[in-house]
Amino acid sequence: MAKKRNIIVGQSGGPTAVINSSLAGVYKTAKERGFHKVYGMLHGVQGFLDEQYVDLSSQIHSDIDIELLKRTPSAFLGSCRYKLPEIHENPEIYEKLFEIMDKLDIEAFIYIGGNDSMDTIKKLSDYAILKGHAQKFLGVPKTIDNDLALTDHTPGFGSAAKYIAASTKEVIRDALGLNYKKDSITIIEVMGRNAGWLTGATALAKTEECEGPDAIYLPEAVFDIDKFLKNTKELLKKKNSVVIAVSEGIKVEDGRYVCELGGGSEYVDAFGHKQLQGTAAYLANFLGAEIGCKTRSIEFSTLQRSASHMASRVDVDEAFMVGGAAVKAADEGDTGKMVVIDRVSDDPYQSAAGIYDVHRIANHEKLVPRNWMNRDGNYVTQEFINYIEPLIHGDYQPFMVNGLPQHLVLKKK
Image (tube, rainbow, N blue to C red; front, side):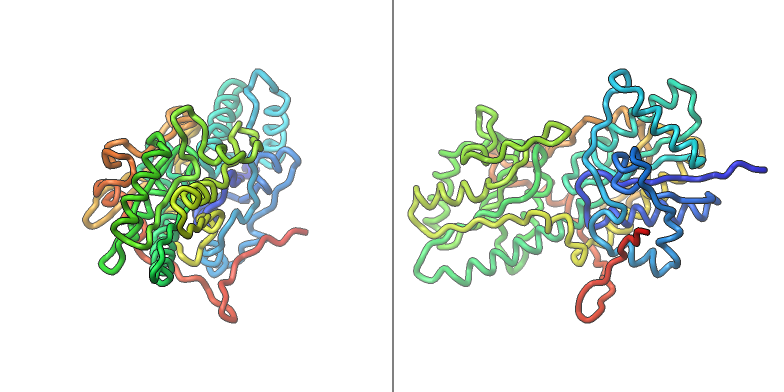
């Protein structure tokens, strides 16, 4: 009797508007390639350690369900922020994971996530080689932050950038309608701890009928609060309504996050990341006190990653592509790798899936090049805009029921 060929897939880290499109790509390609069962980890590797998983064929019954899944935000299977210990620190955890995989006849383990998730793939593939296990381990890129090394960009980034650019235009329009005989400053806070790709996306709001944001501050450049105040005062001499975009992760020269200047949260996650919030609120209060005009702070917050109604078609299609490519790579014998997106052409825009050793990707951050920002560090260059602009193209309309988007929801027993 032939051994059953089963595959398991999990989702990890902060979800995106298209993370489930990658899941759909994994499922559809695995079925086409003859895998017997496609299991889904519930809440990533953390849930898998508790033997929480589901047979995806009990959830996905048709091509319509696959299309609905591609239009569903958040992590369909549930996510986690769980850091695997180093192998020598706790080998028992690895033994347990591989026992569960052996029990389920798992041939390939696919993890959809960002930098920390690729660290999980690296450790599991290393352990498998060390102990002679046959399972293949493949990573599928996912992060709105766009900070994974070696890939041209990451699935989830294009849709988040599209939402941010559109929302920035709307905020600018709103602010302009309320500036009669009075000055106003609006500070928009965008996600991005160390990488400013998302904050830079606000520059796309500059179109034929919109001036775009007046200043953009990324975490790749040191934030000087005195220069920030001086620049804002100069802007107010030229216009009544000023809109500024800042990354949540901007830091002053001594290394402190701006949000910490106002006594921000001390919460730290499993990966040692401080929770960042309140950057825009702090700066709006600071400017209000220093200048004496109306100020407002706006955080796009989780809407940046969950607004699937604003998903980019390019992004959805590429997310589906990399999910499928991971299955193909595992089926053809690859392990310890991450699928990447290679930009083939700019005009017309075209991309293809590639594959790289995950050791070259895990725990490495891709930041915005300093020469893609202006000399003063308060705006992005045309080169930055040219890079990001093709990624927001096209729409992927949700299935509407009674005026609202319909989603595919996991049915638990």
